[in-house]
Length: 185
Figure 1 (cartoon, rainbow, N blue to C red):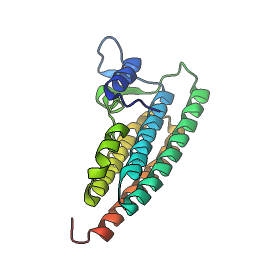
Figure 2: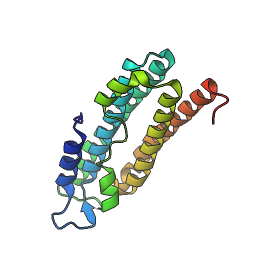
Figure 3: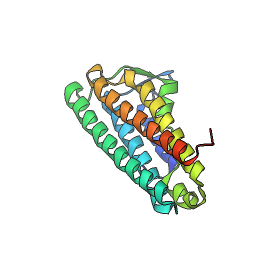
Figure 4: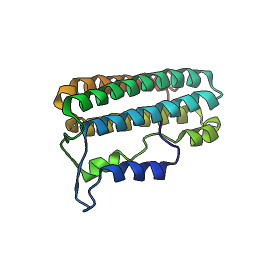
């Protein structure tokens, strides 16, 4: 699982894949992109677990627990895809060049670090928790869409399955919002 030390994690991840020449293009193994996506799913699961653990609101604990389980399923899925990409393409086969701005996204933590959640979850109001979860799902969807073209084409259908699940999470959260806050936008 990813360390809570975000700066060290991000610099370690990016340094493994960037050219020393400061090229605007970064070459990644397809498996590396998939392993990073697995890490991001683990980060999201940790966020939701901590939110469930430290929230005093039962219904937030329930939806956060469900989402933590789903994110761990996604993590397992991406780990399987990464292993598959390694076996199909070998360790020396490079995926498409990844533009620098997309490579930087791989260093971005989508969720709040678990240690921070444990300190702040008790202060989350109901609206805050759902809004933050919706934003997390939106950011995950955006990242997956941006990375999809750099994953081997034979794995696009797998990426699409995970994308659809993330969309389902977002729709579920939006339904919770409408149910609990019908007068809010």
